[in-house]
Length: 352
Image 1 (tube, rainbow, N blue to C red):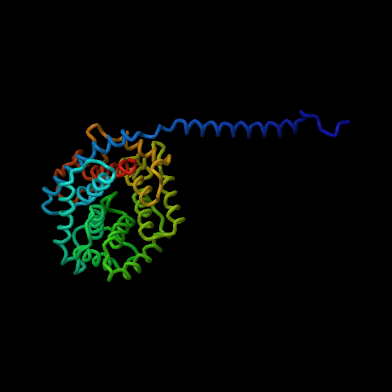
Image 2 (image 1 turned 180 degrees about the vertical axis):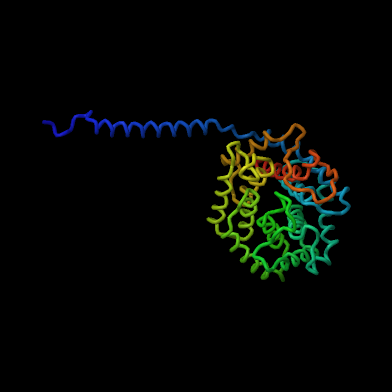
């Protein structure tokens, strides 16, 4: 009699069927993965990216110019700060920008801070508090402004402001740009590191260490949080693996359409997508040819309207008198101009 059991006894048939089913499932998974990769759109060409940025820049330039005229000396993050950053980055990538407008906007921002120098030294700040001061310093940084007595005064204000906290927090709640503890913390800490004086360095280091500890143990709750937490970790000199963890958190929230949504139950939009891509590359060192970055670029290109703008619906309740700020989309123009700035930055960063 053979030492081996007959090949088709019930128990052998059951084991064979189980192995066969496992093989079929494994093959199906491989086939599905191959199909998904094959379904990914081809990376956008340099010409496509350049065309999108070129169409966007005049709209951002006009928004900055009109807002300056309409607001009578008042700096705004969405129409001055972010367009200054976008124009400055575009210029470094070889785009022709309105240099005169950029210089004028940088000087305007510096003048706005100088006007409030006494209030900064007294610890009072200005409207918008840490967010406005932080974004203004970020704009000056990107615009090539050198440290001076005014930037030192603003740094002194940021050092003393909300010292009872382990982070900075916004003065009001106007999502998504003004609501996140991480965003307020990032722009404040960034301003301190960039423009803090030699005399302030030790105190800046002490506050940075407190902030870093808070950042490491506090999770993000939405895309704005995740973006600014990643940026703040980089500014706070967190360990590379901690920055890497923050990168993965942000990557895992990318949508099937290649974009990011402001909130988990919302659809992707240009603001969340632009901020995510820019942070992933600038703070997380994600290459612009990474699959996730390429998918994000494709989303932004598809979302751009024929006039060169991006339209994002506002989630904020208005607290100021409405005015036309020079960017399309009426009541949605301010978040849309912010979104367009970040979309333009993310696209420009992908230009060789």
